[in-house]
Length: 67
Image 1 (cartoon, rainbow, N blue to C red):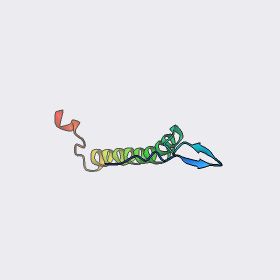
Image 2 (image 1 turned 180 degrees about the horizontal axis):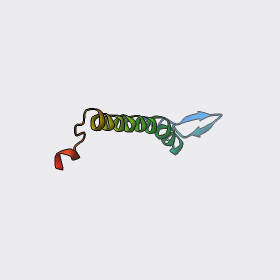
Image 3 (image 1 turned 90 degrees about the horizontal axis):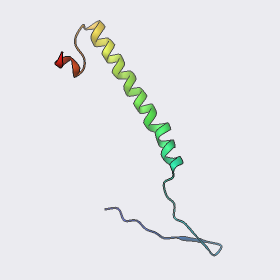
Image 4 (image 1 turned 90 degrees about the vertical axis):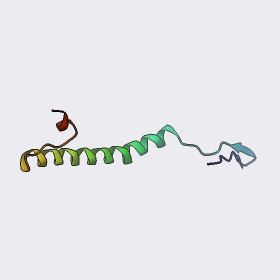
């Protein structure tokens, strides 16, 4: 289990809050990591779809099994 340490530091006699994750950090992770990974995977999926449909003339994807 992860233990949280609430050790407040002192700077010039003032206690400051411990570091924490902010909305800006979450936004940066989504913008610079999650979005590029999603776009790359979406482009790969679209590429595989067209390759299977037009080059191999075979069904690609889960929905093909229901039709």
